[in-house]
Image (cartoon, helix red, strand yellow):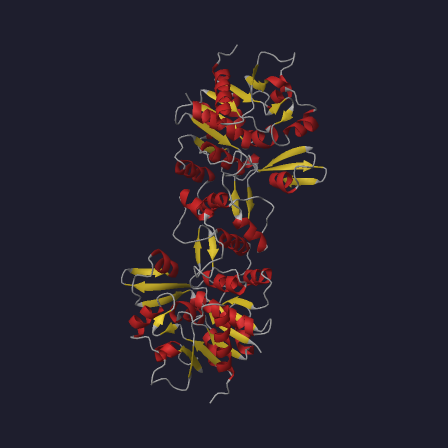
Length: 307
Length: 307
């Protein structure tokens, strides 16, 4: 069984880890968002790819919720003391990976190439593909101006309301090698419980990816990032309210118009309106075991014979 | 009083710190070797400049003898685990500086420009100038092949005998801004107790620097890197034996032919042959206080009326 999972950062990484655990080795391909990549201190940082990598490899910090476990911050503190940018939190172990990747990219390796090497270094059989090897950067249009994702999210603490999003570079980007093939060969497609606007839409904005999912002959199932209408983490609820006028499951489905055969939602979001294309379960992933349960339920929803 | 000090790494940095302490703020200019600079993990590393910077700022590790005090090694260990080069020891705090410098160089800043910013970040009034902003790399010709300095010194543990040295790039390099002016304006010139072949000769190989010292109207004094014919640290004694046939003070003077008015040697190296151009003292710098004493003696030798 071959499964493709479109994933953003932390929430997506958790579901990806659950899928990785319940599938046989090599059955899972994760297509990761690169819209929130950034260059800082001369390093190319791919936060969403790294969240998936660290989580799959069991290296992630489960308490803090992002980055690596047992992380230290000496290099960043030192860089700050020498006048370097210090607003983006880079741990020492994290920097070790960024150094390896940045060096490879400067030598002309592709992002998908180096990501594959990193995944193999961690001994993982799951494939992790960036949506594109080309430069694609999510920009948030707010009343205070337009900001690259990390500047809005980290430096400005995602306090500015979002009126619109731009995926700069998307129009001329190409899917990374393997992305379209993985979608076409998949027995099921899963959209992780990530923020549609800043995690999944950037992936879908790469010409060819949305179209490949639209012409699927298998089921595509998304997991809602909301529990009781609230974000488990991050600003997705606020963004949905401002951009779509609410946080109902129907509005999540609307984010993926033409792409979904079913939406997995939390029991807290079940209403009278909930129709047959909705699967209700407990979507909170508190640990790897609950991620596996949600992955199992999601896969079952994806393998159901379409009604 | 304006003093110029030509310096390599650890030994040079100690004397530079001694000079920094005994001179008034702003009186000292250190011209640092860049022949052992390297690019590793995508970082531009200038080990000799950093030894001077860390020692002047009191950030150096006095027990290990190189690098920063309280250093940790998480980023390097992580980089290794992801397939990155791990043979060159880069501590986390050290990496913080390398990130800031590498980013600045990639943006087009000069090495002397960013070095000046780093010195000012540390609150230091001493000037630290790389000999050149251009690429200059010391190569060691050995029976096992020709190696860049750090590959020979660190990766191959300076076990290969050295038959000759090359300063690649020196012929087309230009002195960094301020270097020639500092030498011309100096009231005294000091050559630190660094390895002549791999620390001082690369500086002198930059066209214009040797000539500026040769036409001095002030005294130039070197401090021998030997104590009792042995290197305090590193392979200078072995190199001198193979390249010059011995380790006497006269052979140290020969390394700086045409440049020296006096050589400061350790009492352990005093012999009957020792002539008037030699100043005998205790040259072992065990701590900052002994570095200050040696700096004071060296300055006195440099300020003597030429006989």
